[in-house]
Amino acid sequence: MSKPVIITCAPTGGIHTPTMSEYLPITPNEITDASIGAVEAGASIIHLHARNPENGKPDPDPDLFMQFLPRIKQATGAVMNVSTGGGLGMTREERLRAALRASPEMASMNMGSMNFGIFPMMQKYSGWKHDWEPEFLDMTRDFIFRNTFADIEYAMKELGDGHGTKFEFECYDLGHLYNLAWVVDQGWVKPPFFIQMVFGILGGVGADPDNLMHMHTIAEKLFGGSYEWSVLAAGRHQMAFTTQAAILGGNVRVGLEDSLYIGPGQKAKSNAEQVRKIRSIIENLGLTVATPDEARQRLGLKGGDQTAF
Image (cartoon, rainbow, N blue to C red; front, side, top):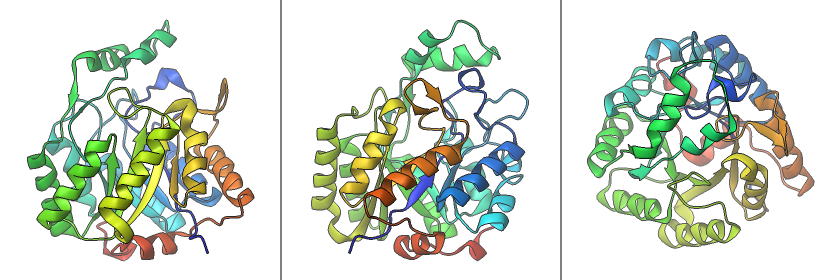
């Protein structure tokens, strides 16, 4: 029998800006409400970033995270996954601050350095709510998201060894899978591994179904039965790619971090709306959706009672 599908929801992220959608959660209260709604709709993992509540800019301040992490945990029992990607342009230390403070069950981990181009989104807007938004997007013309092997080792030993935190290994290209395989060979992480394949970011692997199939084939060769895999795709590719992943026996990620829309030209009014849609697709395929406790068991997580919030 097919395993229940683990749905991750990423409510706000560090890419989209307030001008792009009035429904993007910004404040701690909004992020809390969006996360609770997503869990009630069927998500078992919440992948979290924080934002400055005044202007919506991605913010690494652990105090902001601590305004919503305990509340989401108490209201839902879901797995809290704290981003170490932070916002584009943050230092390694800034990106790790919240996770080191919270000691979460999970944290994200980008598996390599890469060009990360979000500047094409500027063309869609003629005015901005905040001055930082066009500057933030435009700087990615000449930007490398840095995650060297030294950065990866530091984060894994600080968070993994130091806190018992497991990782959502974000793989934006084929080479990132091989980077993870090398890391595994060094003994820095132990199975089961949770691999999040990311499609459609400029600078990473394109959103072509053949790429999804090949990434899955290579992951099978490298990790065999010692991993769980999930798929997210940027923008208009979100639902098509997550559906394909579910059909192939994988897990899925949705949320306003990855796409602001629920259909062509139609903005999603909430993260829960996207979760409900992918849940409906999953169940119409004859599959079931995993509970938070099922996700914990399959991913080998330490449990919500072992966090610092």
